[in-house]
Image 1 (tube, rainbow, N blue to C red):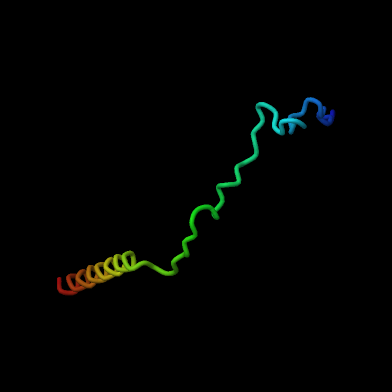
Image 2: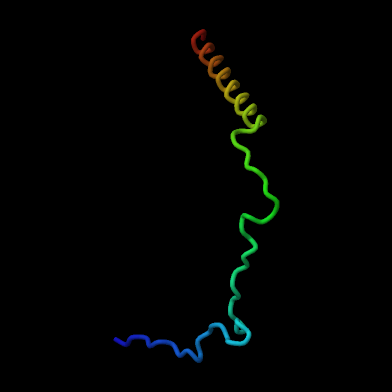
Length: 76
């Protein structure tokens, strides 16, 4: 079984001494896309009032539905 030999460094793509990146090779990734870009905003903790109120309304409506359903089953 033949083992692949090491590639020839003269034909292997890599940084060129003068320009840094040869034509056709992918340049390094940009570093300006991190989370530290833009103005700093302090994170808010906890739930906002709107979603909490909507969740409470849904829970109350579901509880009322099942209570009325239980009463209808008990009477009928």
